[in-house]
Structures are given as structure tokens and as C-alpha cells.
Amino acid sequence: MASIFNIGVSALLAQQRALSVTANNIANASTPGYSRQRVEFSERPADRIGQHFVGSGVDIGNVRRMSDEIAAAQMRGASSAFHRADAFASLAAVVENLLADEELGLAATLQSFVNALQDVANDPASTSAREAFLSEARTLVARFGAIDDRLTGLEDEVARRLDGVATEITSLGAGIAEINERILTTSGANGPPADLLDQRDKLLERLAELVDIDTVMEANGSTTVLIGNGQALVLGATSMQLDAVPGRFDPRQPDMVLRSGGTNVTVTQFLTGGELGALLDFRREMLAPTRSAVGQIAVGLVNAANAAHANGMDLHGDLGQPLFALAPPAAFEASTNTGGSVPSVTIADVGALEPRSYRMHYDGADYRVLDAATGAEIPVSGAGTVADPLVFDGLEVAFAAPPAAGDQFEVRALEHTLSDLALLVQNPDRVAAAAPVRTRAAIGNVGDGALELAAIDDPADPGLLTTTTIEFIDGATYSINGAGAFAYTPGDEIAVNGARVVLTGAPAAGDVFVIESNSGGIGDNRNALAMIDALAAGILDGGTTTLQGAVGRTVAQVGTLSAETQRRRDAQGALLEQSRARLDSLRGVNLDEEAANMLRTEQMYHAAAQTIAVAGTLFDSLLMALRR
Image (cartoon, rainbow, N blue to C red; front, side, top):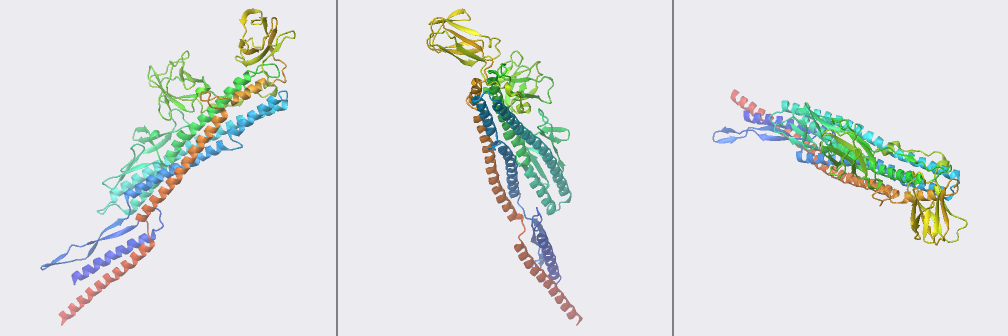
């Protein structure tokens, strides 16, 4: 009877514990991160009675936390990929909308600028047409400025968010380390408390939303958390600090540093996934290339417009001034440099420019130039001196004094060119729509020869506006300003004082042609037409890409990357939901199932209580019999 009583008590206590676990599951059905628990019973050792073994009841073998580390790791990986794509897509959409606007985008503004120049060509004497052209030029400058301001704002936003994300990652790492420590001090024979494991999983899930992580379950129950290419964020009860620090080359572009004791490791290039990976990827894959691409368009525009405008003459009889001003390429020295020398960078060939940044390394004798984004080697020539600068991708880089061995530099030829973009010509009379020289045939000419201006090669030539006379000695020979005897071939170009002219027809002996200043040529539109042609010609990529073509290409590249990221976000969202559903099916609370467990456990509890009651009745019967 004692055995029956003990068996009944063990069953009663076991079912009571099972009821408590089921009730706790029901109570936490809506608690985020809660993993349901299940009581596992174990049979007590049997008692030997004579030649037989009789069971002695039941014990609680374990209260098992229903989860799966593999499924949890898969869910965290899917979450990291989704949040990376989601954050990237939201930032990419801003850039896409900025460039692709049909009315305010670069393509429309650039076309309006060219259309206004065409109006000047149609009526070069019109002050209102000239003023409208300058107004469109100001609008174009303002549009470039607005794009630069917005992209700069995005750069600052990325920097702020990197700092905030790094702070949260550090906090989460500290929280995980604290839970590891509590697990190490509170774990029993059946493992650590389930609530601590739930808390740790919740922190790991949030951490995976911020950065891609790897976890290692240690034998003592703690979890090691790795980020990047194996750098430890959490080791047992110790956590590291992740900081966003001023960039090695540009303080406005933070680097990510993992601090452990007295050791600081730069991990920027190794961090992937999550919001942090999205910010770093966006800065590298979209923001910097887009700024460079827009800068390349601006450089092409300014170079072509200024060169063409300089070949003309304004209403005051002066040669054309530069239309626009533009910031020079930027160079940054690494914070670790010891030489103190920063190079000057100039653009030597607009057509050879590439929309990218460069890293330069000096070993004490030679320079290496690498693509800053990919690390690919860039062919370079020159010694790096002022007399013999380094030449690569249309740039010339020169050091006034040699840097120290080991010094490094970053060259951003195009990212910062828009910062000082400005319109220099403000007076409509200063729009150089006319050609600087005109040609005429003397009134007494008897042949049918004709002289036309072909091109202005050097507007800085001091003799450009000096009157030049071409006189034919005979039908096949001519002199220039009375000197020389040059053979005449119809259609040949003649270079004179920075200009080229073309003679055609059949001049006669004694015929005279004059090249002279075009001062007073109010109705002349030749340079305005030449400017239109220059702006429509191939300017970039070795002369194969027009300005409008470059704008379209940039918009298409941004749009393609944005659309690709949005598709990736949708796909990763579906994968995340699938992995979350799988994990929830393992650890989530099903109220119908728990209700059935509650009913079954209640019945077993009543049965155990009845067993105790039977044992008591039997014991009372035995006592009654002994009294007799």
C-alpha cells in the first residue's frame, strides 16, 4: 500500500507539473520569442519484490524547450538577407526618383538648356533669348546642385545610421554575453533555464536583422557570435564593441572598427547582411558610383560648353569667357600617412574619365593605383612628379614632394566636382553666340573662289583677331599677308592665327580674301550652332557617349539596380516567411493542442488522485482488520 501511495503521489506531482507547463504555454501564447515547453516523463527504477520487479512511479525527466537550432539559424540568415535587401531598396528608390523624374531629372533639364541655346542661335540679336538661355543655365546648375545636395544628404544619413546600428549591435552583444554568463551560473542537470534561452534567441534574431552573424553553441551552454569573416562579437560572457569611426581617407565616410581589449580591427570590408550590410553596400555599390557618374556628366558638360563658348565672340567684341566653374578632383590622404604630402589632381582627358574612385599606394619607389571598389589594378604611367605626373584614366596626379614609403591616398575624380559648380556668365551681352572672325572676298575679285571659317583651334592665339589677307599670285598659288607662295588645292584648310579656313572654287590671279575680327557681328549665330553641335557630340567614353546618352545610362543603371534589389527583397521576404513559419511550427504555441493537453493531463491528475484515495482506503481497511 505504501508503494501504491508513493506511485500515486509521484503521478500526482508529475501531472501537476505538466499542468503548470501547459498553463505557462497558454499564458505565453502571444509572447514574442517564447518557445513552448513540453514535460518529458521518466519511469522510476522498479522495486524488487521476491522474484519480481514492480514499478515505483514516475518522475519528471525534463521540461524540454521546443526549438531547433538549425531552423533558428536558417531563419536568422533569411532575416539578415531580407533586411539587407529592404534597407538597400528603400535607399535606392530615393536615388532612382531623384534622377528619373521626367520633369526635374537631368535629361529634361539638359534638353531645356540646349533648346534655349537653339533659341539664341535662331535669333542671336535677341536679348530675351540670351537671358532665357542664362536662366536655363542657372536651372541646370541648380539641378546639379540639388542632386549633389541630396546625394550628400544620403551620405550623411548613411553615416548617422551606421553609427546608430553599430551602437545597437554593441548593446545586443553585451546582452547576449550577460545571458551567457547567467546560463553558466544557473544551468542545472537538464540544461539552462528555458526563459534565458528564449531571451538569447530574441537578441540573436534582432542582431541578425542588423548584420549577418554566425553562431556556435558551446558545450557549456553559451553561444559564440561571429560577424564579418569570423571576428568574434561575443565570446562566452565577454562582448566586443563595434564602433563607427571617421574613415581612414574621408572622415565623412565612417569605417567600422571592432574593439577587443586594446586591439582595434577594421572590419568594414567584411561586414555583410542586415541593415548594416545594406548601408555599406549602398554606399559602395550605388551612392559613390552615382555621384561619380553625375560628376562625369557635369565635367563633360562644363568642358564642352566652356571650350565651345571660348571659341566665340560676345556682343562687346570680346572672346567668350568660361560659362561654368567646376570643383577640381579631390584627393585624400590616409590618416596613417607619415609623409604629409597630398597630390594635386587634374583632368587631362575628359573622354578617358571613368566614374570610379582610386586607391594609391606608394612603397618608397613605385606607385600602385587600384580601383577603390574592386581592388583591380589600374595601369599607370609617369613618375608622380610635377614635371612627370602619374597618368591614368584621363587624370594627372602630381606630388610636389615625394610621400613617405607606405603612404596611401584616395582619389575621387568625380564625386565632389558638383560642390562648386556655378554659372560664371551673368550678363546676356556676354553670351558668345558669334564666331570671333569673319571672312570676305575683295570687291574686285574676278574668280569664283570663296573663303569660309572652318574652326577655331586656339582662341588664346594673340593674332586671332588680327586682320589676315590671302592674295592669289596666280590661279594655283597664294600668299598670306604678302609672304610665301603656297600651292592651292580647292577644299584644303589653311591654319592662320589659331583659326582654320577653307578655300574653295577657282580664284583668279590677284583675287584677295580677308580674315578679320567679327566685332559688331550681332546677328552672327555660328558659335551658338557650334556649341549645340559640341553638346550633342560624343564627349565621354573616348568620344562614344553623348551627355544625354550618359544621363540615360546613369538613370538606367540606377533603375536596374533598384529594381533588382526590390525583386531580391520580395524573394527574401518570402523565404523569411517560410523559415519563420517552419520555426514557429516547432516552437510556437498551438492553443488547440494545449487545450487537449490540458484536458488529458487533468484526467491523469484525477486518476492519480484516485490512486492515492484507493491506497488510503486499503490502508484503513488493514488498520480495521488489525484492531479486530
